Length: 363
Image (cartoon, rainbow, N blue to C red):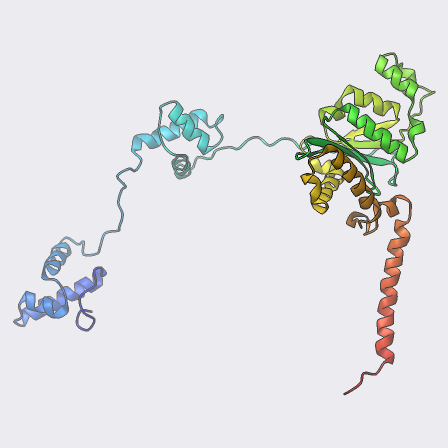
């Protein structure tokens, strides 16, 4: 070690120390001085004397580095953390809250990570919040037909630059954007106006029972009028929405009843139950980002009408097989999709026939 590589390194293991001490003792036995032998080996004499003393005590190997931090936890603080857990774990279900609780009660002042580390060392586990029972999605009614004009979905979206909200009505099956209304408020009045426009667009406005609507709003409608032998027992369509107060309002319910529209609400906290209308807003704002920069409410309403026309007649929709919503809504979607499949098949056959009958020029 020290014979060829210079001085002995600052740290060496116990066998190396024992070997060096043995060499020193051997050299001293042959007439060398201790200092001369250490100098030849590249070993400090004081260091050799310290090693010799530790060897006599059986502690020639170096002790493990570290030790206790001067700011480390005291035994009483560890006990206080465990006591805090036993008293408050049922209420404060996180290590951060327990650390704050300990300071609040002046019981123990430690960081959240310290609480977590002590609880882990003690094998104590904080129970998280009790999971909610999953809400069951309501089944579709037996009378519903999965075709355009049977299932609609509606919701509001915000345009903050113009300080306006827009309500949109969408046909779920064909993805056709039926109507939209820009307003400063989001109430049942906007829903009613948007649905009247959509019903008129779909030539269903004659289904609105104005007499029944007036009776409902006056509170004079009878059970026979709503569900009696003279009432139409099958709704025209289903209108899906979230659980917003304007959707759940009594006025909206009256209007939907007079229009023979059945309301269907998504599960609370589950926006995927009305994913179609959420997707509409997401794609409209992504494909036409200038809409969110418009500040003039009138300009926003006019531009939304233009975008709605383009969305329905030009933009190909992936969810319905890359046809336009107008194609799907008016029954052209199946023919267009089949024509594409036929075109792909014909093109493949044409490529095969070409290569079977055409000889490449070897040059």
